Length: 371
Image (cartoon, rainbow, N blue to C red; front, side, top):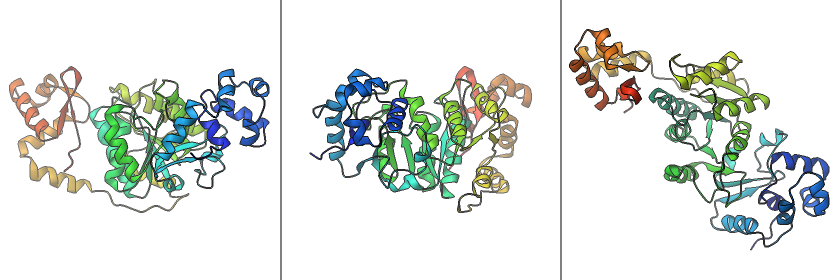
């Protein structure tokens, strides 16, 4: 078994978080000096007694698990801050991690990256936006970073892969497990074309406090953060705040005033985040610092042509009356002067064809239809 480095010992020891590590790095000249320091000296700097005992223990189950995981696959790596492949943007952070456990391609962590984050329970429009923005930005040469969560995160990873650029999932658990478990196949796909990243060693479960901590890495890796949808008490707002503190750009997509998942984005915009309506709004901000490919978006005319080729004039008019905010059958009866039965029938047909989606409370939402 390979001899562990001092950085790996630090990364694999529970109880040495970003704040404790910052104090240790300020007090010692190297990771070797930290690991060889006396337990009393470490405890005096705020390291818990359990952590000081584990740090010098060659038989620590956490260290053994980390080494076993690393040796289990050639695509697995541990990068310490003094490794030449450690992401350069993370070196700018005051609270950088002791290291990164990585599965997949390490090289892409130095590429131009943007984070796409948002609600775990987005509206249908939010899911569409996450996919479409990630896909477009991916085609323009930006790697997409997100957190592997349900909702916006998952759609952003899928959009990135559809766009042809690598995607990076920053995880809140050890990489010996996948959270949420519903994204096991997605995680495998990401590791195949991009990479999974975690500062947490194997055996680390999905604790609540892990996810705000990992958010600083999501923003820290990137040039900027795009918030697609977020409530007022959302982890995505933590990521956006961290991005601003780190000097990264913050972008937000506005939404309906009736959508509670748009309120976080509206708050960010009021606080100075850049309002974006298309991927080009983001590219125009980033092109001053990086050289990206230019990918023309489909014109509005071509979208109209597609609709006209698929829908009859009656259904085109009905779809236009749907608008872009959630609506009920009764509201459509009022707008169209059709009967409730006629509206319900047309909504059923449009839902089967992928133009609307039903949601909670008997409300519907118009969605983007992709082939």
